[in-house]
Image (cartoon, rainbow, N blue to C red; front, side, top):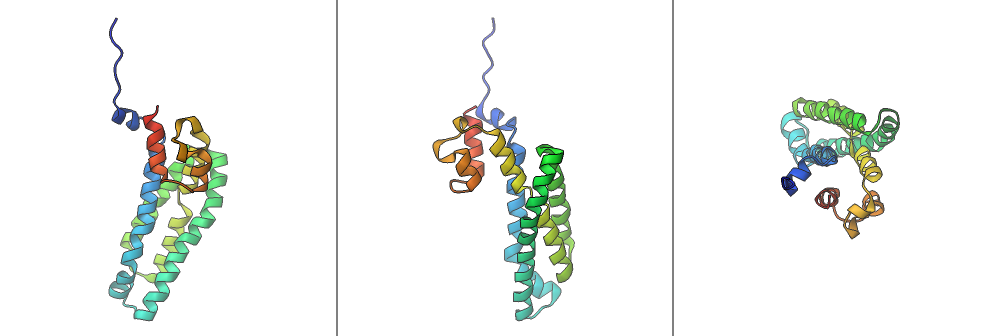
Length: 169
């Protein structure tokens, strides 16, 4: 018969089931962190705050988004149990798209604080970690990327370990 088709590593990564999770993690970190260096300039130039107001609002907005993420983790965990991981990932990514877009068009400090809190609430990071933790076996991961270490966040970045697991497939 015909020789078996060889599938390249890139093709294996493209059909890798954890790619949406890795993309969600990247998008969320990018969306949450992208505002941080620009926020003082925005508050000063667009909102018109003085130095003290810029410092206060920068701290408040940054705290709000991560406080939202901390509270959202509990909500996302419950959603994952009821809706399943893929549906919950979709809902959280839709929230990221909506609230990161609202961040881009917002021109008021108080409203930005509320939008960033909601952006934190919709963070998919916990869902991705639960999805990976429940789906990847330790045999498929490189030694420093055991599932326990991945979930504890003690080793190399999540995406590196996930790609390594995909390449071992």
